[in-house]
Image (tube, rainbow, N blue to C red; front, side):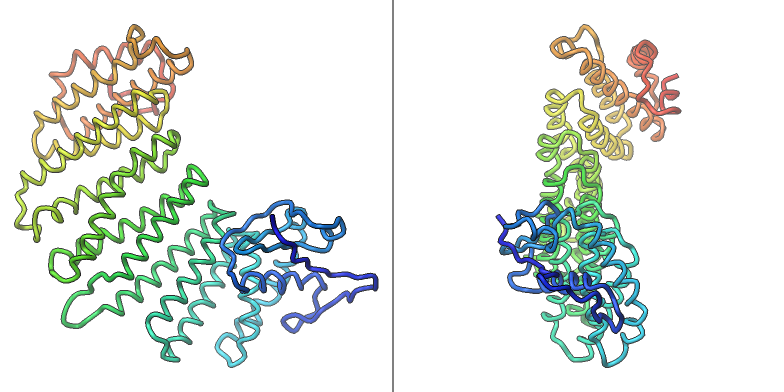
Amino acid sequence: MYSSISLLLSTNTERDTNILYFGMKLPADSVYILELADLLKSEPLPKELEVTILPFDEEDDAETSSFMKEGVHLGIHAPNVPKLVREFRQVYYSSRNAAFESIDGENQNVVDKLMDCISCLLLLCPDHATAWADRRRVLLKRESCRTKQGDEFPARVLFWKAELGYMNMLFTQHSKAPNAWGHRRWVCRQILALLSLENFSSQERWQPSEDFIEWATLEIAVCSVIGEKFSKNYYAWTHRSFVIRTIANVMNSNMCTNDANVACREDMKSMLETEADCTMMWLRRHVSDHSAAHYGGEALSIWLEVGQDMNTCTRIDTCSSNSKMQWKIGILNVKLQESCALIEKFSSHEVIWTWRRILSHLFLACCNSHSSKEALSFLKREIVFAQSFSDESSARTCSIDKQETDMQQQFSLAYIVWLLKDAREYNLDLTSLMDEIDVVKERVKKMQLFLIPKGIAQIIE
């Protein structure tokens, strides 16, 4: 599977015990950094990383080798990881002070070697905050040098895209390292700053370009692939949320004030609409992904704020408040109807009920400012719907086993309690719903729901 590129550190003769690296005497094993850094920079650049047991051709190779590369696939021999980490850390901590003393000087060789060391170290310690901070410092210095040398805009963007390429490769092995995701967001902000400078004019506001659309599309695609491969990835969904918020901010600040870049506006509109619609399909495949459900709520909320303006008007102040509200309610009704099918199929999964609670929260927020009567009518329908999953005599509870029945009843009743909590926050008069609430009280007391958070259950008392 991999073709061996062996790092032979010993022969039949005795090897040297020390080498000169960063001007210091270090163990000969420090050449691991030289070998790995060379693999990271040689064509084709690696796109996938795996720490595993490598299939060396000979038994002796496993003792003297640590890396293999086949095409875009880079492998690190797992049994050697402790030794490699110790060596990388020793070189890194021993060299960083000297490197930063030279960072503003003419001799950049020491700084380049530090960057190689950091690149190697992060492949095995992806949440090393100090290493990421030093990497940002070096990157900013290199970017500053490029600016002084008069590099053109495309070259400067490619510089940051290369860093994203390194991050993509790292995430194929380490997808849940928070400091790594923080670094990726920082790199994205550098790209966005470049795009705004390139398009800025003193005569008019910054307008989004094809480069901006390309950036957003690629970031969403990366998050989607990582979320599919490494399930329940909170950090990937959080970064995806950052991307769509950035798109929405651009739309809010520019889209209703200038008729230029119509194609870009349409692309952004399409992206946000797609993100708002993707949650249902995702939850059908990943019924326990809490992060996806909450991201879906944020994406839908953003679309409800900016989508109608993009569809029906060119400026916000020309839109009818009533028509905008009806548009929102219409979309949420469709989502709620789709959610019914999910609950029918996965009624014993908490995330599916959480998704419906998010939709109901958005619906109540719209209705409360539009019509309290419609909000109360919605509450009554939802309580009746959820009660059908908690009623022991219902056909919905007779066809599944006892454990799933218990979970279904708990989640459905918890959903009702959350609905009542929202209703109280919106100061809705629940007098007309007292009969339904009394039934819920009895069932909650009977089941002694331990899954309902303390203080929330008191709402129905």
